[in-house]
Length: 293
Image 1 (spheres, rainbow, N blue to C red):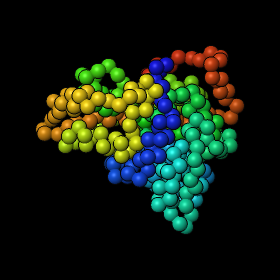
Image 2: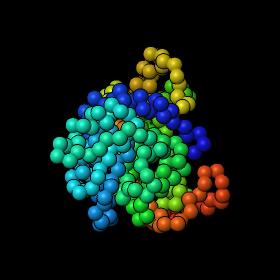
Image 3: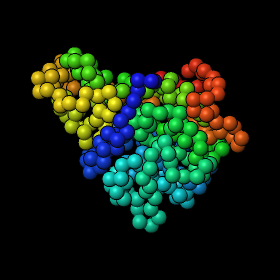
Image 4: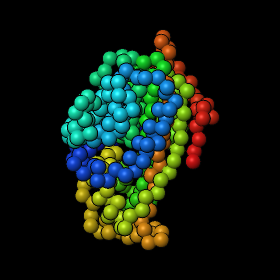
């Protein structure tokens, strides 16, 4: 994971610019959201406080608000324009709250959250100890964390098309289930369950995929990305390489999605300090219920 570095300023800027176009391109995000919400069946209690981290335009927050009508629902996002756009979903009778903040520094007290929900946000965070340490900090003992994240096979066709042109980084890289599961356990989260699904979306042409990525704000944000403008010659060669991957007249794009849930640790369980103490090693088999599909 040491070479996995995300430019958080670029991520915030990308999503800020995409606030007005996001919902024109979020079909996959909505599908993953439904899969994620099904995991709430494992949480039979009535929560008092539910937070939606990386809430974007607030569709997920609105669904959480509908499910838990008596709870305080808080939409948290680092991109202020996204939260402004989320006002349209907040409702008028008892709207969910909208708070600008980072997933690694949530503006909430210790052990104050019953359900921490995050749909396709955690892939933009490279400091997993800080991320899951913060989840443990705000979750009540026995509180539920559920999230989805993109895995490393995401956009593999686009990555291969660029790789045929040059060796620069053009497509964001994402962490796999092993990295996420180990980080969850190391942070002290209990009984994590992780699944992997792959979706293949198809497009009329490679440029249609690129327009969708821009519209979502999901464009390249690795720190190691090429900072200069990509030459027209290189870009045309990439498009030609991608065109060669057509299947039944359509351009495929793979999206690997990790969904997971876990539980806040009991009172008194020590948290491992970042960079200190002994950290045990866990195999994937230790992640109860984990599977790949």
